[in-house]
Image (cartoon, rainbow, N blue to C red; front, side):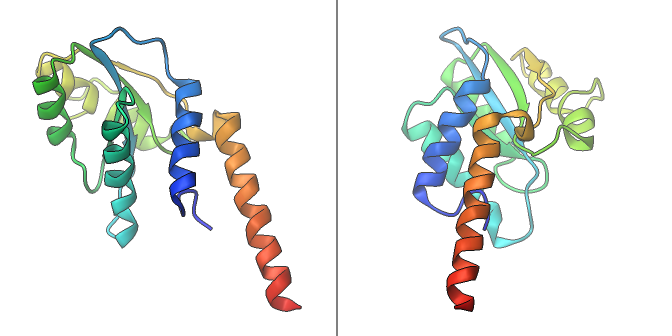
Length: 154
């Protein structure tokens, strides 16, 4: 069972993400970097981003390998008057994509692209697996899947 399989999962994820977010000034936001996918599940990133925007949650979501793309976020945040962002991986571990595509000094990293757009970016290298509330979500989903399997086998 995926982490995001119901509306309530999205709400719980936002609550869990808030626990790991730094204190923000009024003109700052967190930008979460998801992996992205060519699978139809890529829509989960856009859904989460939309929910954050609609609920005035001080964060946005983009994806390295699908939609929403970082350029869309940069344009949108600049239009909102955002003066700084904190970049965080929306991935279980802060691995290659977080280190190289998000936080590095390479010209095409998200950090450097935000900086070049005049929005200073501070990267954080902590994966979702370090967040106790998100680990609890995974455990709850595993229990639910096991219970369903037991019921089907009976």
